[in-house]
Each structure stands twice: as structure tokens, then as C-alpha cells.
Image 1 (tube, rainbow, N blue to C red):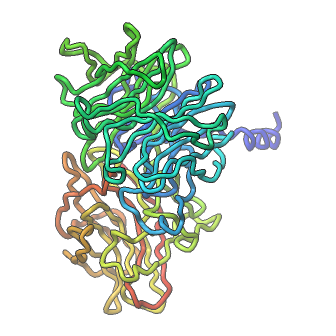
Image 2 (cartoon, helix red, strand yellow):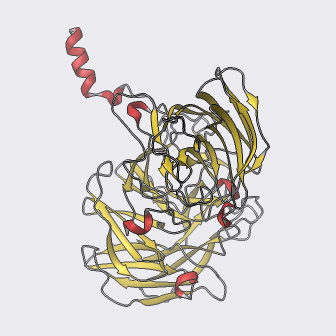
Image 3 (tube, one colour):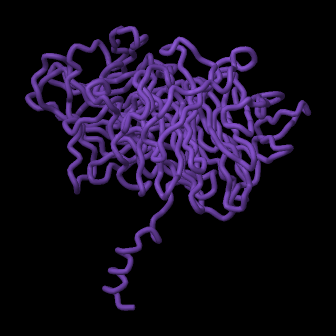
Length: 535
């Protein structure tokens, strides 16, 4: 083959030469045909998974962060990568243009029907939305409100011959009732709920906080797999009936039992191409969020059996290591580090609210991420500032480093860019300008959720407007130690240790930002060369 022909050929088959991203801080794949749980040590809460052909697709809750509804892809249920987001902006846009902590996208369901991908989710304040696409890697439809109402959450559809159903739970904070599952009918297109519904299971007596139902049909039975008992300490319940409206028999099929794995529940039943069953679920890890586990699953007397019954009481318990569902697939991870090629953040990043084109330059051909110094306006701290660019914590122990150059324009003080650990209280290391000099600062804001102000813990004068910022995070409580360097080689610790705190319903998140104080002259920007995550 001639050289120019070969070059043309490789332009059209780049996937043959693409390298998988492999995390330096967390791997579940042991490289010998087995995996060790968790498969993802990051806040992928309320997972739902489907298989289409030989490909697995997963989506999870995204709450107030955008873009929302991340789409992850895997060939073996162990090695995952983020390939898209289904929800560009949350609606109503005027509401979600500002951070709406704990609100937004709750517990979605993803399904494949008539050659289209569907996602349903419940917004606890507005109702049940649906979006769909025929290209999971492409653009999804605009959200459609299929059922309006407060406190209607965790929907899951089922197309069953000529009938279409949707089951959902209730959020007590909005509906005044919870621990109840309700079944409704929809039109064949799945775009409109047709009735007021019928309650099909009451968990008040034995299964408090019953929620997150997933609806399936296998053989003669309808199954609802639903968690109960609460996020931190709950269990997985299986319900079955030969009539979709019940009555439903019940059985606890996964619990902590004799293990140290708290609250194993809420997830998805999925089969591999050879017909083997698996269950993907989360485990609450406090400040690190809800991390993902993969359990082998079998069937006995028409009941699912998840994990292993280690204590002999007839209920499955989580396992640590097992053979992979599909052998021979390469190791890959959701991206964490980022070179910011073409000035754009990778798919691992989300904003704290609906994004604005004004926040970041994102010019093709650039090799840095330029964030503009957007005003905090009247906010006392960063808790309700939307232009924070954040990602999930990827492991119990890791270190992240970035290189940033702050250009104030007009030599104006009151502008800051930095590397942050964000939550109900937060801390960051940043670069700022005052007294005609550039400074590296370590800032802590305790009780940001209550409107308290930031405190400068320490600051050091810099020789230029470029600095390397670093944050080391250590288990078990995400203890953060900050350091900086002017040459990228020798780092000095600065300030005080900070114990990270989670957000509302999501983990603490790490990331970068660039802001200015109110009444500061417009202008200024920060260029982040890269963002690296390693041991």
C-alpha cells in the first residue's frame, strides 16, 4: 500500500488506533479474567443498565449537574467509559440555570424499544420526563413531560405486547407519602400516561423507604426489583406476580448480611449475550458517593438469586471477586485526567447548573481550557455559583494537579481561579491578584450551604501569574492536603488539611473554577493547561 493511501485509510478508521483510557487510581479488572468490586469507585448513583446486541449501556442520576444523564458504555459490565450525555440542559431552564442542589434528575431508567433508546426519569418537583434517540452516541430528543406532578419519582416503563406500563415510587418530601409503588398505563409510544394509576405494593410495614422500582417480565411473571430500607443501610427486594397489578409476592434477595458491604441495593438486572444474569447496584460510600458493584445473578424457583448466600439464610450477599461476564475485553476506565484539547473539557466534566456559552472560550486548535472570570454577584460563597466545572471523585486515594495562568486584565483585584474540593463545606487552592502582585491562596469555607463566607487560611506571593496547583486526597474520609509549585517540580504544602463533605444527594466533587467578586471591573480569564489524576 502506498504511503498516501495508508494515511487516507487510517483517517477513516481511527478507532483501530485509539487507546483506551486506563485509570491510574482505580481498576476493577484484575487482568486474569476476574474482577474485584466495586467496578467503579465513583458516584454513579441509581444505575440502570441494558444490553443491545453485545453492547451494554448505563445511565445514572445526575441531579442538578449538567450535562445530565451520562451514558456509559461497556463490552463486559466491568470496564466502562463515558460516551455521551442524554440531557444537554435541564428544564425548566430558568429554574436550572442556577444550582438546584438535590433536585433535577432522580433515578432514571433506560430501555431499548423499536430500535430506539428511551430514558425516563422523575424530577421530584415537576414530574416524569422522557427523552429518546435512535443513536445512543448522538443527540437525544428534547425532554417530554409524560406525567406532571410533585413527588412522582423513579419511573420505569415496560412494553408488554399491546400494553405499555410505567411503575413509579413517591418522594415523601413532596408527595406526603412514600414506601408505595404505583402502576400506570401509557400510550404505545410511551409519550403520555393515560390513567391515575393503581397502587400495587405497600412497603410501610416491612420495607420502609421502598423506591427505585425496575419493571421486567420473565416467563409467566412480572417482576419489580426495588430497594428498601434507605440508601446507607437498605436491602434489595424482589416482587413477582402473574398479573401486573398484583397481588405481588415478596422476597429480599440481596442484603449486607455477614459482609462489610452496607446497603447493597438499587440497580439493574441485565443479561449477557450468553443468557447469564447480572445485577449492577450501588453502595453508599459517604463523601465518595454511591459506588458501583456487579453481582452474579441466577434464578431459583422463579426468584432471582444475587451475589452469594454466605450466611445461609436464603438471602444473597455481595461478593468481592468473580469471573468477568465477558472475557477478553481490554481494560478501560471513565476518563479523569484531561489535556483540554481544542479548549474543551472532556465528558467526565459537568457544570453545577445549566451551562452558558459565556463561561468558557472553547476555541478549536487551542490546547488549554480558558475559563472567564464570571462574577459571583451577591453570593457569599461558591455554593450557589453555577460556573464550577466539576467531576466525580474517582477512588479512595488519589492526587490531582493542574497548571493555571490567571490574566486579570486591567490589573484588577478580586479575581480568582483554582482547584477545588466542593461540597456543603469546601476548600480550594487558587491564584489571585491583589496589592499589584499574584498570590497562591488556600481557602476554606465551612458550612457554605448555610451561607458562611470563605476564609483565607494561608497565602504566598508568586513570581508570576502561572502556578501549578495540587490536591492530595486520602481515605477513609477524603482528607485533602493542598500544595503548589512555581516550576512544576518542587511542591510546597500550603494552608490546612480539609476533610471533604458531600453535597446533597451527591458526593463531594473536584474541579476547577474562575470567578470574580461583585462590583469588580469586567474582564479576566484563567487558562488551565491540563488536569491530571494519579496516585
